[in-house]
Image (cartoon, rainbow, N blue to C red; front, top):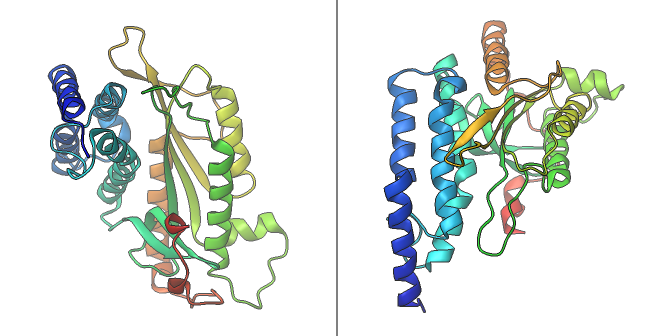
Length: 300
C-alpha cells in the first residue's frame, strides 16, 4: 500500500528538482535528437549535454523522488526512482551505439544477447547485427553515484573487482565461442590478440574523493595487457561550485584512451573487416550445448 503523504512529499521534491534542473526524459530526448539530427560522431561534442543529464538524474536520486511520469506507476516512489536510476547504464550504451552508427553507417546492436562458449551474454554494443560470431563486442560500464537515503556515495571503483571478473570472463567466453573444438590455443597472448571478437571496455566514471585516478588507469591497463583489445574512459566529478559536473583528465598511459579514441579504433576495425570480407564469414558456434535452455544471468 502506498503512503499518500509520502507520495505527495516525493512529488513535491521532484517538482523542486525539475524547477532547478529540468526533467531527465526531456534532456535525454534533446541529447538523442542532437546526435541524430547533427550526425554527431564524437562523445566530446555532446559531453556537456551528457554531464548535464547525469547531474539532473543524480539530483532526483539525492532527493529520493522519481521524475514525473517515469517509472512503474504501480510501485511506490522509492521503487520508481530506484528503477529509473538503474536505467542510466542503458542510456550510456545507447548514446555510444548511436555515435558509432554515425561513424560507420552500420547498425550497432545495443544490449543484445550474443552467444558465448558457455552461455549467452548481454552485450552493450556488438557488430555485425547478428547473435552468432560478432566481430566487435564492447561493454559500457557506468559507475559511481551520489549519496542518497542513508547510503554513502558510490565510488567509480566500488565493486571493481566483480566488474573486472565479468569483463575477463565475457571476453574469453565470447572468443572461445568462435574457436573450433580441435583448435590449439597455444600461447595465450598470441591467441587472444588474433581471436574474434575484438573486445572493448567503454567506461563512464563519476568520481568520488575515494577514487584514485592513477589506480583506475593501472587497473584498465592491466586488463588490456591480459584480456581486452581496447578501452576508453570518460571521468567526471562535481565542480567546485556544486552546481554540475566537470570532466576529469585521467593520467596519461598509452594503452588507456579517451572514449572518442576508442570509438575511432572500433570504427577502424569495422571498416577493415568490411574491406577484407571478414563480415561474410560466419563460423558455426562452438558452444557445446543449447544456450537458450540456460538461465539468463539476471535470473540467477
